[in-house]
Amino acid sequence: MQATTPMPSSAVAGASQARPAARRRVTDAPTRMFHWLFALCFLGAYLTADGESWRMLHVTLGYSMAGLLGFRVVYGLWGPRQAGLGLMWRKLGSAPAWLRSLRTAPSITAVNWRQGQNLLMAFAVVALLVLVVPLTLSGYATFNEWGVFPGDDWLGEMHEFLGEAFLFVVLAHLALILGLSLLRRKNLASPMLTGSVEGPGPSLVQKNRVWLATLLLLAVLAYGAWEWQQSPNGLVSAKALSSLVSGNGGGRDHGDDD
Picture 1 (cartoon, rainbow, N blue to C red):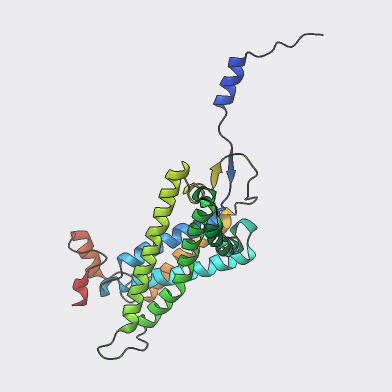
Picture 2 (cartoon, rainbow, N blue to C red):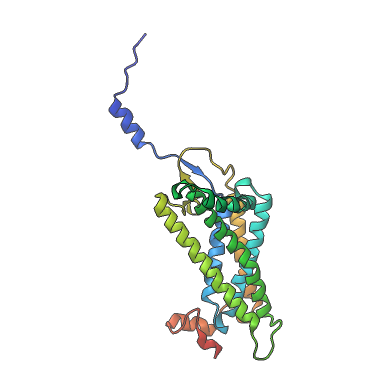
């Protein structure tokens, strides 16, 4: 019987250092696809908010946001557990108890500030989802000139206010991600970029459902193509395209409204 030669401790240490850090998947492909399509649609809609030349593109992007919200609600109700909307509601449901802990805690260090940070993140996400409803409804009403009286554009003003409020929440959301990433020394944007995070533990996502994310992308593109075909001048007028190419105009160009 041959004796087994033990490996040197230096070789064991080298092998452990060469082994890549453990990663686990926490966000599936459809959730990430929704997130980025939702963000891009809002960015495009905000940049094309002013000027008749960009109006159809602005409207199409706004309707796309409404459709994406519908997908997220359905996926959150009947999709996998880690994508469920109930997780966010449960986080927000713990807000009253956390606020009470601020008064009853014997010292500042005794407060669970990490829970408070997570509550702020959840509130920002829910606020973005909820704001889409009045934002798109007011946009639809403005586009179809509902309740418009001579010299009174209250629907348009409401739509503009909601758009600015949505932008404020977006910027607050980004600031929270950046600030907490620095505070915790961990990239909190990673779940929406790669779908996974470093660290031990089981993966929350058992099926990535890339096929569903692909279908969602194709549905948004197909809707945009359909709107382009239905519009007599396309989603962007020739005047707006020529101004963009020549560098004389941008998405938020008030000159077209004069």
